[in-house]
Image (cartoon, rainbow, N blue to C red; front, side):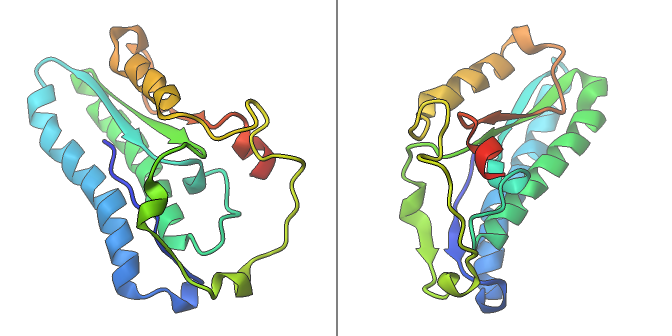
Length: 173
């Protein structure tokens, strides 16, 4: 399950309800719908559901103005844990991959309000924000984890949130 937008980034009091709803519907409601409608097809043979969440939903909260995005990603992790427990009886595994900064085009659907500067807390990090590689990750690094979780090699892994962030969340979290 991979649907995601950053949406509008603005202070909470300035975030329009419509922008909140768009982000939650795109990121969280679509996750629920995908899983819900996959279950009947998976009940007979089991399998693996992998939800793409984010470090911003449960480990890093320094992206000011991202209340809707972070809430949607935290919701995905909670939903994953509930689904993992409920679907275990059908041998359906459910896990979440939580990437950090990955070199993708998600910035194309991000709308930053100038008012973010009003709520931003000045924070200085050591040189670089990605300790392991000193650069954002690559999509194929996330894909490799997804391939493992989709394989039979992960038959005893369920209900796990796995971070793919080069230790970024440990530095910034």
